[in-house]
Image (cartoon, helix red, strand yellow):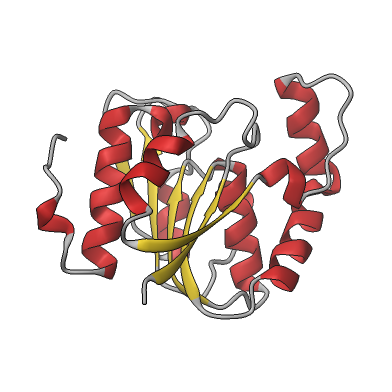
Length: 185
């Protein structure tokens, strides 16, 4: 039986997330995947879908709502792959007891504002050119490792080379079948 993998979108959810289909394409043959649109998880009801409005809705209670819903929905330990605000949601839920086997976080920039880390295995990936990535001082203070990918910004997770890298990393961590995937990165 395949391992369960929960994938949580960035703030745009499925609306601007065509890139998510690449992750699903690579990973669905190895995992039983549950996908959450972060806006739906947060119960966001936004009239004008601008970046500023969506971001504000998450910061003004949406993250907390999404954390609460995720904790109610996921009761068994599994693997998590999450992007940007979705990764912040998993980070916070894990601190509140979300059962996590491992957590692969891409561009969770809001965690830079947190002073504690979850007690679960996790991997953090950020783009070098993301102005909101956590600082090295933050990482040292919390005792975490961050992988910073050169020449990429915040939405590095939508680039095909990064998609392949993330999928390979995840498969290598979870299984021994990753060498069967052609490495392009």
